[in-house]
Structures are given as C-alpha cells and as structure tokens.
Image (cartoon, rainbow, N blue to C red; front, side, top):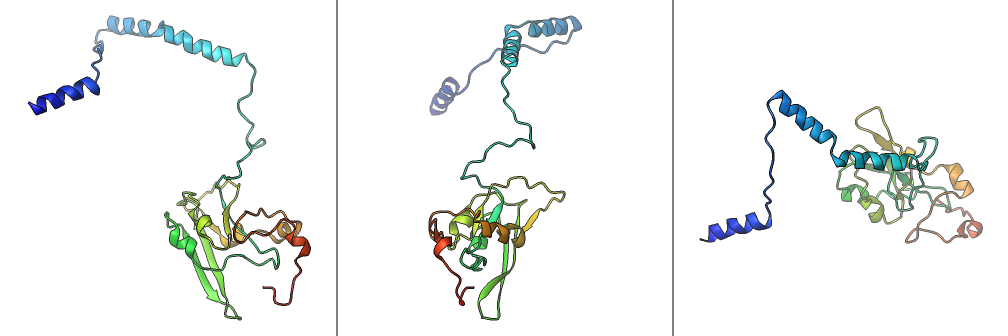
Length: 204
C-alpha cells in the first residue's frame, strides 16, 4: 500500500506524460514531417528576431585583440608578486602558506638562507594549467606579496604552463614611477608614503 502511494505521488508530482510520435519509416511520411517542421510558426519567430536585431545596427562585440573589454578590480587572473616601496625588495618572506593552502596543489616554493641568515625565496613557480584562480594564496599571504592581476592572456604552446617568480615580480621601472597597485590591509602603505620614506643603511 505504501509503495503504491509512493509511486502515485512520484508520477503526479514529478513526471509528465508526453505524447511522442513514432519516427516515420516511409519516405512520404518523412517528407510530410519535414514540411510540417519547416513551416511551423517557431521558424518565422526566430527569423523575425534575427532580422530585428540585424537592422538595429548596434554593435554587441569588440574587435579582439585590438579592442578589449574593461576588467573589474576584483578579477582574478595571472598572479603578481609585489615589492616593498622602501627598498625595492621582494615582499615574499618565504613562509610557504600559499603553497600549503593551495587546493589545486599548483604552487611550488623553495627557500634558502642568505649571508645574513635571512630566509629568501630561491625558487617559486605556479602551474597555471592546474590553477583554479580561487584566490586563497592571496588571502592567506601575511605580507600581501602575492595578488591577482588583470593579465588574462596566458596562452601557451605547452600543456603544462608554468609561471616563474621572476615573471610575476613587479619590474623595478614600474616601482620607480609608482604604478604598482596597492590594496588596503596589512602590508599596504599610505597614499603619500613614497614622498616621505627615505632609504636607510638598514634597508633590505
């Protein structure tokens, strides 16, 4: 009894019986089916929509790559490594949190000790073929060293496309003109910090 009620409830609430015609086998029946489908009202409705949009003379596309659409400020594309404005050195301290939190397991980082017994990054690579651009590496970074930029054109001739630390690092000429994008939060500096901060002998 319970099974019968369950089946009746499923049929009445979830399933709908549709009258499906059998596929014609005779040539004349096939021809009639083609004619019937050709001169349906839906065909002319679709043509009317196409012609209406065609004579509006409105351009809905851009001539890529000559023209490019603007990208939102929160767009997550190719990673960027930031520098310190005070000394032009890398912000990355080699803590390895980005490698540990990466859900795609695409970040590889190796560190070493320099002559001053400070930890520095020796090798840093990101496999863009596996990266899902979730942004966890940028969120967990305590120094805001790694962020997502707006460079989304990352076509490669190889299946495994890697990006190295030197490719992501902010160029020094960009640092000098002050074009490095900063973000609010820990590690970001005030808007006029470059005007009042001076290098000291202890800068590193």
